[in-house]
Amino acid sequence: MFIKRKEKSQAAPAPEQESNGHAPVMGAVAQAAAYPVRRLATPGPRARALLARDAQVVSQAHGRPYPLVVAEGRGAQLTDVDGNRYIDFIAGIAVNATGHAHPRVVAAVQQQAAAFLHVSADFYHEPWVQLAERLNSIRPFAEPARSFMCNSGTEAVEAALKLARYHSKRENFIGFLGGFHGRTTGALSFTSSRTVQRRGFAMMPGVTHIPYPDAYRPVLAAQPGDADYGDTVVNYLEQVIFARQVAPDTVAGILVESIQGEGGYIVPPASFFPRLRQLCDRHGILLICDEVQSGVGRTGKWWAIQHSGVEPDIVACAKGIASGVPLGVMLARASVSTWPPSAHGNTYGGNPLACAAALATLDLVEECGLQNAHDTGAFIMERLRQMQTRHTCIGDVRGRGLMIGVDFVEDARTHKPAAALAERVEHLAFEHGLLLLTCGASTVRMAPPLLITRPEVEEGLAIFEHVVGLAAGELG
Ligand SMILES: Cc1ncc(COP(=O)(O)O)c(C=O)c1O
Image (tube, rainbow, N blue to C red):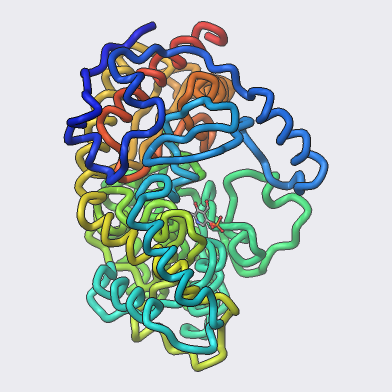
């Protein structure tokens, strides 16, 4: 199958090619005239050699969906060690917000590295304060924000849980089935997207899970008068859980993903967050939004919760904030951030390299990432909905901005998940030069860099439709 693409000359690249700040990737111009969707010889010999070495020494706890061995990345494209080129629709799990090796992020990191690499969180430095000021300026609540910096999403969640308990002087929490919040013990006690992540590990007490408002596959029966399935879930929390199991005045916080990520890229119905906020206000419970995957512009707004008009009390953030340099942040309303010095801390908090990368990332997201996430996200959703009319195995297309899920079904009427098909699409996409990841029961997610260009999107979607056809033919 051949997909015609617009001619581009090397001397005068098309504007959309320039818009991510990169020179064209090796091989990209040569392929511009007509892009063949074809199977790559992957993993090639160099990749196989590295996989063999990895198998001897790297912990097998890391689950890998397919054998991608990266040599280099530019923008939304990666090259493997055997020279195969891939369009990256997953961006290191929604991390490479500005794409791979954006020149401005690289320059910021290099400049900071040449100045100093680390002083420990015991001391002060400008990039740390600057980043906290910048985060304060984009906070998703009216009150000023205090930020606590760490190294990952799970640590940002741990900080949120500890602060919620400290501030409220309460022990209990509400979490959501299908949620993913990380793998350290506190965060893991909320994570419930796959049992393999929990089996064999003791959990933190005090966490009660309720269903996430997944209107495509609801598990609770709607009651007369419910506005939507979000309303149904909050009523269940109030009328069943709070009435029979956990007294609301013992609940420190509700930890919830603004869009559920690993659980299937599920966007909650409109009533959900406003009702949840009301419930929290009524009982003095903190609303803690996990924006580790959905935050920092991914949905076309700085924070996905902003689509609902609701203000959280605490936000956990990581992934996209520093374009791949490890950084987690817990942002809290100043009036909630009541803990004293040394109540929480770490060695690397406010790491100068991570702060420099984050400041460059936030500038780029503001300059063009937010708009591109909105516009390109709408374009991809529209194209996927057209594909849905041609492929009955696509049951649902959902998401916001560049956080998009394609849900594969065995039966379009019952929404029975087609897990094997989703996995086959993921694998065939890799073999044809497109990086995707599955999530939830049978969803393939797309979370490309926020600065992805339109030609890269076109190429990725062409490969996607081709492999959906192949997978459906094999398994359908
Ligand atoms: C919503 C959410 N929260 C928390 C985490 C944990 O982040 P990390 O892997 O950086 O610890 C993830 C990771 O996928 C996530 O998607």
